Length: 197
Length: 197
Image (cartoon, rainbow over all chains, first blue to last red; front, side):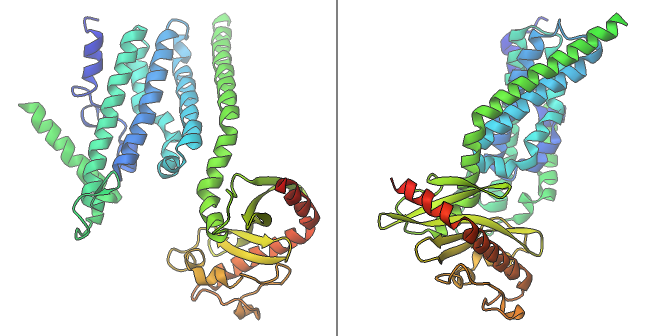
């Protein structure tokens, strides 16, 4: 591994930014980005689980038997997700209500298992931490960006604050499910165009 | 065979540790989660009917075992006297159970207020039992021992138009509250006296 820790971190921000480059974790991406707040909340929760599971799996990579590694990874991830779920209920209850079922569903988010299998199981603790942090921050930024576009156009607000003033007619399509697909598609398209140059 | 045994042990150890961690976190956050749920789910309804009370009803709550169920009771303080108690009951609505908070003055046995907490009624129709203040106000100052029925069933409560079933559900919940109140009145009075200090 010739890459430095810093490179492991920064690849998550652009070269391997999860929803746009890896095209992973689309389910929460589409579902929760109705508003910036939801997007960031989901991103932070996922980042926390990603960092913790990456560190732990990397530490245990020589202990976990190869044949049952997936089951062990899932056990680690599910534990951290449940911890996050309980903490969110205890301290940010309104956010927990608006994210709903998508918190427990972080368990089956393919980014987490993907990073565990592809990276943490083969690398030392420090690069795994950097990888988890990078991918997590990249995921959070993507959700925040998508959430911003949808919230600004669909509700005329940004983080709950009015952007265009009261005369703005909200473009309700954007906060509904089809708006998420269209918006994500356009962003993927732009990312690919920029990547080609 | 020995290999199988090793895998088995690995999985068992993983599950044990996960279970232990989860139990610990759950224990640590249990009280806070319960409080948050009360604040965000029942809090708005409680504050609505106990408007003007000088304490925090969600904090001043106690439990009484009623038959095989523990019930939460919220205390409201008016003019320096803790003599209003609010609690939740359920009535069958159009789309499932309707949660109703009924507040009773323990000295006069009269209803101080009625408000809907959780429901899955039709938005804009049955949901008006929650949002239309005039509907809940009909119960105000009535004796809790009365049997409440909507006018369509020969009672005294004006149903929300188009939402007879939802209105019937709320009335049934208040009647149930009356039964619980009758059953627990002595216990309630003692507890209220104790909390007066």
